[in-house]
Length: 470
Image (tube, rainbow, N blue to C red; front, side):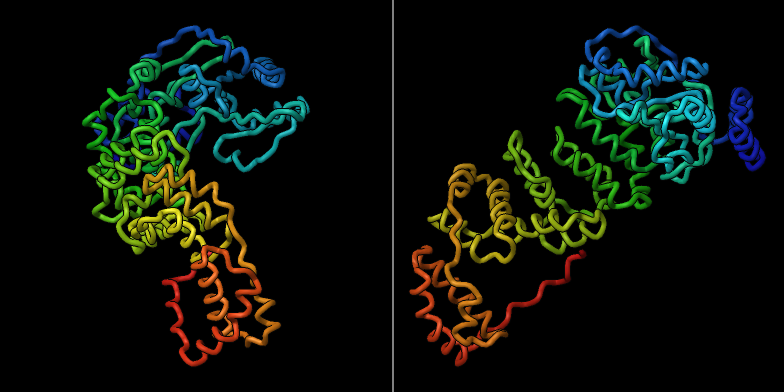
């Protein structure tokens, strides 16, 4: 029976016969299938007025709206842009939804001489139209997820706005707005937004199992929308805990895209604690035991100040090995990894009485580009909560070592280990002179330095654990 009903509902979807959906629900009412929660919402509409809405209606958007009206297709603003307008924010990106299928949109745009670009989205129901060579508009056909694997869905097109709203993740993202500025709200998204409440549309378990990345989106939007009085619903946290292992199916890049926004967003400390309690962290590459106390401290000292996301991330880690494991999962950029490893290696090093001298010496002793090293030290000071020292260090005019490799070549120092060790010793003597020794002073020392190193060669520094990926 289960196989027959699955086959039947898929065929209805593929043939766009969702007008028979109530019969499908009746057929599946005893089965655990996403269709069982259809039609739970109650449509609420209201007229909106806002200067933001007036500013959205560019001549190009007006032309797009008129075009869909001419061909008797409905067109509405969808999702995040509606949410932003209700929060009195100007949307940066506007998504459009329509009752027209991709083929119908292509026919319409072709007849009207409208250029279409980036046709990769067509298989997902999205057509991008470029109006008057000025503005791009992504328009997506209303859809229903027929089959999902926890990350991607096999979709069918529909003309029912409620069905499309029902497939979206959160109630605050499941609203539409037409161009008479009428709001269409099927799942109390406006009320949830006003109450700063974050809820999945329908059953949290079903929503998450359709796309496990929604776990991360839930926490990101909590940080973005919630206020200090907002609490997590018990049912939601239980669903997240039960489905956290589904995050294994999500790519590291997508996880990092969401996590990095959570880490720098509001309530980062409490959200990370909740994620740990739900067991989400281990599927992101973090160790079983995260340093939540250190993370809380770093969040507090960086709040409202400029900082790099990795300063907060590494607060959760105890060793550089843990950063390597995190990198394997999340695929950090080289810059992100380098900042993280620098902070881990230097965050517990005693600075001594002269903290500025510590920073200067650290700068000289760190290999790499000067600008990058300088910024890494600034980030370290932010992590260690040294705002006065940070300001002082930023004013330090970076000195340049007067001696170059060419100078040593002219003095017949053979290239190889001896050459490198001689150059390093020259740099150290210049450093300990507080950068006062001149080029002549340093070159006078080179013969004796080289001779001493021949008699007492130094051991080479151990190689790094592994080469960073390119």
